[in-house]
Amino acid sequence: MNAIADAFELANGAPMMLTMAPETAYVQGGQGAFGGIWGAYLPLIHALRDRIDILQVQLYNSGSMYGIDGGIYTQSTADFIVSQTEALLQGFPTNGGFFEPLPQGKVAIGLPACPLAAGGGYVAPAVIAAAVDYLRGDGPQPGTYTRMDAYPGLRGLMTWSINWDAAAVCAGSYTYAEAFEDVFGVSTNLETWDEPEAFSAAATRDGLVLVGAPIGSGVRILDGLGRVLMETRWTGQPMPLRQLGSGIHLVECVSVDQRRVARVVIP
Image (cartoon, rainbow, N blue to C red):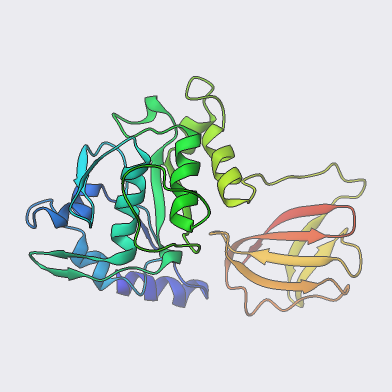
């Protein structure tokens, strides 16, 4: 995995994003037993802890699991979300050794988008909000599990899946995305406007050129994984390509009253 990531960064000029979404048995399950599937991902996570961007354990299709307080908690509850998430943030002992905690910014909560999306583990948006607010130190204790600390830097939410979340037959279209927006105060939408003048971006021999961008407007360039590579202002002169790397990039141009978006391929 390290060799693959190193090769990707060498070829693309940007780090490879590495995420994991194992089931609870492979991670927190190592508290109750260690062998076979139980805790099987822990050595891998530990070996790659400096490389991993996000660990988002599936808190569904799980049944009951131990918390670090020795209690047993059942999926589809706020207690399950809080206990299993804090296990990653505090670390826990196993028969294979102590699993050291991960930084808050590397841990996200994985949940199904609706009851149809998994065999168990779905929780309503209000339960998600209560659990996350408590974990981040922004709300009261929602159940019997008492957290050891607050984690305002918790990375976010993962869902299975965005396709289920979009389906009206699920829990209503985009209810999980809306819950994420409400809890974390961010937007999952990429809005566009009808433009009187077309906006485009082109990679030329002289650099990156923007067509239809007002002079002085803010420019942000993201790679294919959504990571910001450059933030600057458009001066009308080509921008250097060397720090962007090859691949498909998203160019956002923001002026006083408009936001323009274009894609560009940098060879």
